[in-house]
Image 1 (cartoon, rainbow, N blue to C red):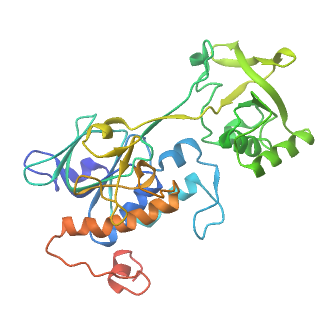
Image 2: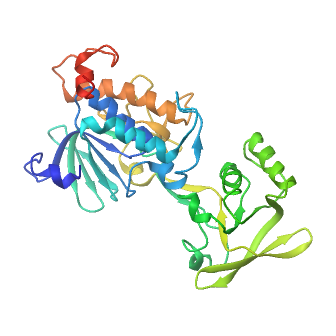
Amino acid sequence: MALDDAAAADSTSTGAAEFDAVVIGAGPVGLFAVFELGLVDIKTCVIDILDRPGGQCAELYPEKPIYDIPALPTVTGQELTDRLMEQIKPFGATFVFGERVDELQRGEDGRFHLKTDAGREVTAKVVVVAAGGGSFTPKRPPLDGIEAYEDKSVFYAVRRMENFRDKDVLIVGGGDSALDWTLNLAPVARSLTLLHRRDEFRGAPHSVEKMRALVSEGKVRLVIGQVTQLHGENGNLEAVTAKTANGEERLAVNTVLPFFGLTMKLGPVAHWGLNLNENLILVDTEKFETSEKGIFAIGDINWYPGKLKLILSGFHEAALMAQQAHKYVYPDKKLMFQYTTSSSSLQKKLGVK
């Protein structure tokens, strides 16, 4: 549901759409928060700066396998997003995409007043920050003229593997992303070269082993060196120059994937008066509430002793957050803990009874 569809029926005297909760971030943890909030009858609006749900999973590696989601031996970022969207469908959450929450203030009535960079205003009794690591920007290699090739033959993410079929691909980097896409794109590309500044890799050991096996089989070329120049016209790459131990070498490639990591910025959240720890939001481990009552932080954007940046951890945090959020949304109503397997009322909400 788009926000405009709900605004007429759910608006305050100021014209702002009103909800029980606003979830900032539509990644997997933000989506599961909608589910947990829905189970306790909390009506939710989700706002995300991206143009679709899924967060980093859908934006940076929609076809990359994820292996540590309970009961799903393997699932891609996009498949996980699709399953979560299906799971929360019964709760009719409102989604706002392509907008960033710039302002967050508590009004005299105790409600939170939010304003996006598009001027949209929303009010809520509780706010859940599930914005991952904040806004993220891929690190650009220091190469002259690279901007002209971006989104044409230089890409910082693989959103659809089929787009790289029969391409001469150069992957630059030595971390997990570089190794994972080397393994996944090798069967698809016409040729694939992995370039790294040294013959040691930061990625998972088993990925390094698989990569070296492909190299020994002649399915992947490994070059130790650094890219120094791009060659092509009108954004269409024809080759790159790499500096190696043997001097300069010209590599005939038409597609480059530089994986130099991400620059993470907390963005406007940093100015909301919440206690921070190295650009992460401090929370307790009982209800994952921030230093401001009624504002919660779940997923990669929060910090507490022993924090693990796993989707699984974020799901756990969302469940405990919803229990406390209910106390703010329904202060006079006692919440009875129930299991979906045995509660007819919960099953009715989910549309399974």
